[in-house]
Image 1 (cartoon, rainbow, N blue to C red):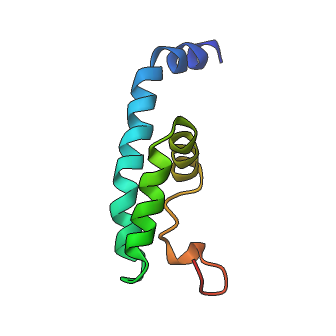
Image 2: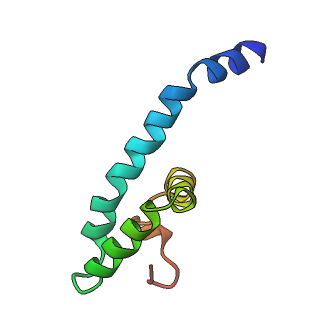
Length: 80
């Protein structure tokens, strides 16, 4: 367990880079799955959130722990 803690503590910068890379790849996936009429709003809301530290944190948290929300299996009653 101690080795795992040391490994995680020693790779914080790499972990942060991974989280950011995943976030950067999320918007194209979201836009690809959104209805054409919804794409401008999806982009606008995503970019609005990225303008604040709290918004970036929320997006990173959501994308990395919930996913991009583009899988058809993640829908509720055919919506989402």
